[in-house]
Length: 171
Image: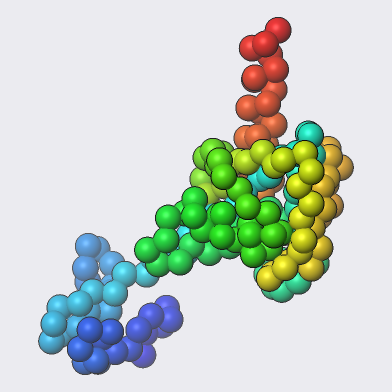
C-alpha cells in the first residue's frame, strides 16, 4: 500500500506497481513496462475581472471555501490551455465571455499552482451565477467580502501595485 495516496496498479499495463527510488524520491514504478507515477500538483486558472474600478467575485456554493468569495476560476483540464480554462470557468460561473486576458500572477500553496489572469469587462457586463457559484457581484477593491483562497489576496496585491505604478507613471 502506498502511503501517499498514489496508484496501486500501472495505468498502462495494469501490473501492480512497486515503490522505488527515482530522482531521489520514492515513487510508484511498474516493474513490467517501466511507467513511473509522478505526484504532480493540480493547476487552477482564475480571472480578476475589473469593470469601472470594481472587481467581480463569485460566492462558492461548494467546498473548499463554501460561502466565501473568489475570482471565477477552477482546475485546468488535462491538455487544456490555462487561459482557455480561465475563459471556460468564467463562462460557467458568471455567464460572461472574456476575449482578452493578461497574465497577472502565478502562486503555489504547496498543492495547487494558481494562474491568475486579469480582464476588463464591458461596462454593461451583468454576471449570472452558475456552476460552483451561487452569487456573483461587483465589489470595490477596498470593500471585499471574506475571500476563499490566499492566492486571491496575493493577486489582488499584485493588481493594486500595478494600478498604482501605472498611475504614478502618468503623473
